[in-house]
Image (cartoon, rainbow, N blue to C red; front, side, top):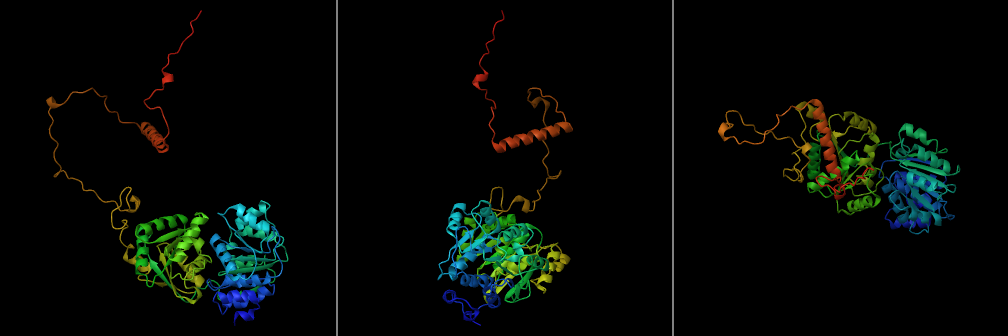
Length: 489
């Protein structure tokens, strides 16, 4: 089947042909006719199969009739992350080249004033994250009573416990007669029951088993130790020895680990950039641009980059931390092997993470192959060593040097002189002793004195840290002035 048989308008077909696409993907082939028929759709498909175009193309066809009004968008698309929202905007610009439609992007990290100007003029397509959308609504700058079509992308994440109140509030602000579309790669049963509150007699389009992974991705497990330095060394060995590595995304569970791993890779000569939720929007976009253009072939990221980012040429994915939620594993490795390309994923598994690994294998319905020895074999042999101890390019790092922190280096034993080899103290005659001022005999401090001493030392260190001003040995002149006393009568 070709795009001509889906019922799209001539303008949309011209833009699709200019983009180089000739045949729709299975999710596009099944979902687009139902969207054009004004039906609610619940779409489930593997990541990287074209879900964004499955609702973008029919929306452009439906928006050709009518025009936008001030502060009242005609369609609304909710996205979980800023990067995914910006990517959807790029799709509308590409496929809507022959349309005169206005598109607005409401995400955090951008000035409110610029966004207010676009909303005031009237927008046909409003792409937003839930938090910034509600901010504009509470400021009285936005009305959602004119929304004709509501799209909730990455529905499993958008309906996660953290987003449920915002989503319910936004849905109540839209008209009851709206058309609602849900698209996601994973749809657990409890989340699917929750989605029934927002969909009216939906058409379920499922082109693959939920939470399945693409067959073009080679998945491997790597046993590693729990020490941070050994784990980073194992990751560096994987990157150096990976076959046909063009670029790769390294996923961490915590934002703090993203920053630490990013600095470690740069210190060892790997061109890498970081991406996590605490970065401002400009820095995040610069990092993505450097990764897309190949200036930095390694991207160290949190799960903010695991959802819907369309970077077709990603060759490898490294899970530095095994994800806490099994669904996130499907989204992470889905950044590679997109559109029929080959890809590879490596997941580092440390002792104590067997439960998370079992949940992942149960979700995807297959056992993941181990590279080298398994975690059980490594435990039987002994401690797992991921490689050389991290030394910052082979040199031993010291205080203020280029090596790792002191807490990550094994303490070196210091040789002690034995009684036989230690030089005997020189005898001192009483006549040679120099007489000096008599000193008070040293008194062993009591327990209370030691506690007070520690308190005083802590206050002194705190004063040094904040560089607080004090008089010290200097006495101000106004304190030395004589005081004139009045004589008594």
